[in-house]
Image 1 (spheres, rainbow, N blue to C red):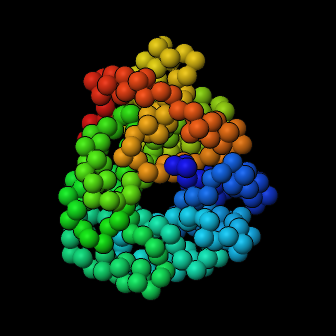
Image 2: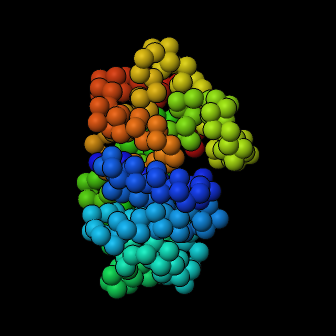
Length: 294
């Protein structure tokens, strides 16, 4: 299954009982991959996920895939965060470590990648990946320039299709591709105000409105929502995720799913995505009318 259970900042604010129930439900539905981050939720999300998965990690660790990430601050910081992640997740190793937001300089001087390679040799991480929204870094990785890198997590969705040609090259170099922000913080299926009325989350509203990086999605997403709602009235909410599911270059899709209904809906879409003919048509229209400008 391509879906990964994402545990962002909002997950860290859940009480343990609810968090445990939602994680158990995800496992029941067949999700065995979990994505988190060292600093997520003010350092609360990752330990909470570890508590929720404690029994599963003890009973069938090899059946789970645990991913975490931290910023590329220094070699010492990265080693420390990985050790802290292993401790808070109650496991002996991390399956996928995503180096979050490195600069080209940090990758090209090799010190950080050497450290990660060393930690892999010690058995603390299985795969080294990079989480980036920088098109220049995506281009560089697509050329196979970094031998240590085995995967990449990028912001790929209907509004950011310029990544596609690089992802195809990345797959040819046998790297795993993780597609983040596939719903653009949910903006591809409903407006920020509808989401707020549904969730009553001031954190969500503030994050979208106050952060320039996320605010730029609002208008292009509104254009696309209007198009798919007009032309695909009965299935418009399924199209953004189906578009990514239908992409052969994408291996995994980390998504935040903090309600039982969202898990049900996304699993149903995963099993029965909208046909490729439709997602291709929407993709072509979106390319012409509402792409995010770099």
